[in-house]
Figure 1 (cartoon, helix red, strand yellow):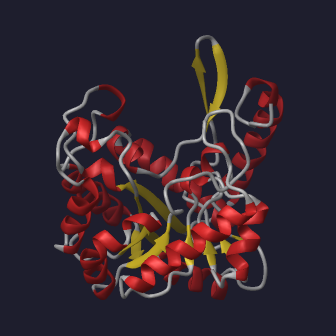
Figure 2 (cartoon, one colour):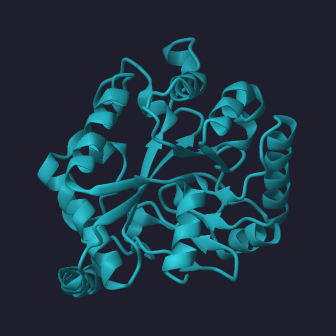
Length: 312
């Protein structure tokens, strides 16, 4: 009943969309756009033992460390329990200018209960233990102490944010963009800032089994794969124009997943996953670069730029 995407919120959602559309139309986009490529490095959506014997996480990190993105730096949010076994590749990536953050410990629930996940929310003590365990894994792997966090499934409650602040984190990238959280930075306190994954602030109306619902399209790999150029540029334009209307430097936060760049041999919903997706991503990025003055940044660099220029 609390999910704003569903029919009982539709009158409010339509009014909100009209208001945002007027705001977007008034925005004058910056000529420069910060672009942060971020990837959630996590256990795959299927059991790898059921598909093949390869390690999708290691394959992803190996490809990225061998310059699969052609010198475009990125930010990796990695599960804490995957850090030690992949320390060699993470060290290479860190040395090459990529930035590392935490993506939970074992892809657990850091927010309240939801209707679409069967996971049980972590208790306060469990959050503390798992965050400490993740930090210890980074330390044992000889990596820098992370100060960036993205909760699995983009769900982090106030208790999680308070915990992050106590442990010296400066950035949380967990706002639920899929529920319509606007692509704008927000301050939690004097140090901790929330920067969401970019999503189109204007919803699309869709139907499932005759029920209408609001769909907010993310700037993620599914969009890179499924949208035509015109649709992709429209999404980017709406994001940047809204930011400009609020006096925020234009920026895009892209989301990819490690398992999307692996050949699973599946059909249907996840049939788009492939090692060829590296080339597809680079081709789409080149088109964005051809129409926009892009500056690639890590999430740490974006945090500093928004602190400085947006006064968040």
